[in-house]
Length: 150
Image (cartoon, rainbow, N blue to C red):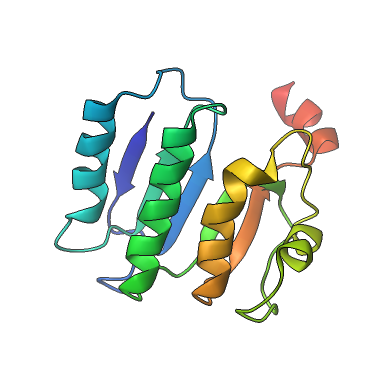
């Protein structure tokens, strides 16, 4: 599991500009590590400008930690947006009501349930939506990935 704080990115002081959710961390979840991450992300006196949250795809504890982190900063009204690796750039929940259904959110994000099971990532996404925080796709479309990788 990985975490990275970025300061002074030009957002208003005290506002967490973005929480970026990304997969591919290689460590298995450990309860001591999860407790340390909870302390490091939720006990900050001031919100970082950008918070990068990594996780292992099949680690339920990691996805629960992401959801709890989104809930924490959204409840403090210090979360401006959530950007997901799990949705392609150009897709977002902007314009959806806070009471949008999971189906509406999945449609807005063009969610690929085979690649990213909604049951793993949906709770963090829906927490943001219900708090009125836009969720934005941050992944490059597959066709652009090939070009970038070359």
